[in-house]
Length: 231
Image (tube, rainbow, N blue to C red):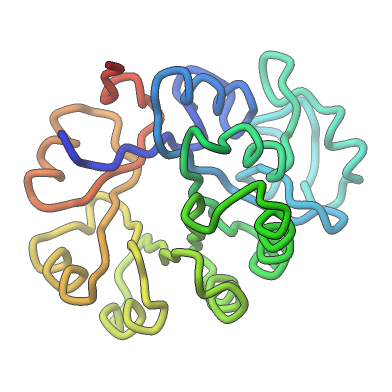
């Protein structure tokens, strides 16, 4: 799999609590050059969290959007870890790994632009260090309009009829799709648009090898240690 891009899905989430600083630190220690995370907006702050509700990954209850930020930051997200802020993860990854920011919640496109502008102006981050992606194509469009210099990727759980048109619309650097959707024809269409294809979520070596052989540029994995060999 030499040359393929291996992205630590929510950090090293197979062995550490997902989307926590521990998961991201672990992935970096393994040697991951790419981290993936999800962002949602709470009180104008971008928090790194996947679900709409708290129960699966924290000791909290209810909807993320209904809880004050100060209360969210007191929850246990696993092994004593807290729900991190996007700015904290970007600081951790600076100079060590590129970060795929998935715009998960409503309003995250604009909020992410505002944070990245701040970090770019302070020279704490370069545009080349981040990639914005989303299932919410409207959020991705908002991001694109305001920050065209940062790479973009739509995410697909199923293929739209206007797949080629959407790739062209977003001027994609990559497209992220469920591994079951990837075929030679899909790869051909994406390549014609100058767009890489990344598969999610791939945790078996044989499956990863098959996708890379087919032509996928890389994949998301919960277990980066299975695929990354440190020199």
